[in-house]
Image (cartoon, rainbow, N blue to C red; front, side, top):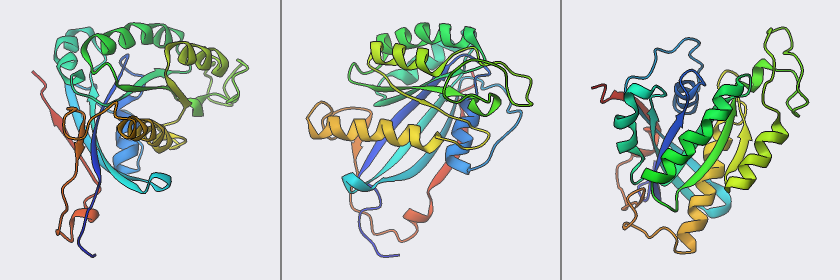
Length: 228
C-alpha cells in the first residue's frame, strides 16, 4: 500500500449511559464486526479504535473510543475520560424506559465535564428486540420484549437538547457505524467552521503524514483500561 496520510484526524469519543444498555457491545461491533452476547460489565473504562472514511469530506478519521462504566461506583473514574472528548455516544435501551430517563443525568454529566463544543449522538440500542422500528410501541417479534421508548419521543428529546439521534442494534450491526459516522461528520463540520481548532482541541488531533505501509491495515484495536 502506498505511503501518505493514513488518516486526517484522530477524534476522541466517549460512550456513556446506564449499565447493560449495550455500550461495550456497540464498541465491539464497531471495532471487531462481531456481537458479544454476554460481555462482562465494564470496570472503569475500555478502549477501542477504528478507521472510518467520510467520502463526501474526502477524509479518513481514526476514532479513539472510550467505553465508560455505567455504574455509579465508577462515575468518578469515567468522568475524567469525558474531558477533551470531541464526540459522545449517549446510549439507552429502547426496551428500558429507565435507561432513557437516566440519559438526562448522563447528558448533564457529560456537559459538565466535557468540551462545551462536544458532538453528542443519542443512540437507542437493542432495536433488534422490537418489531416496530418506526416507534409505535407494542411487543417484540418473538423476543418477548416490549418497546418502552418510541422513536418519536427520543427524536423529540434529542432535538430539544441539540443531539443527533439514531436507533441501532449492536447484535445485527444496524446503524452502529452510521452513528459514529454521523457524529464524525458533525465534528468535521465544526473543524471547518473553526469551532474545534486543529491540534488545539484535546479531542481533535490533526494527523501527520505517514510512510508506514502497514498503518492502514491496522484499522481496529481494543483493550481494557483503568479498572481501579
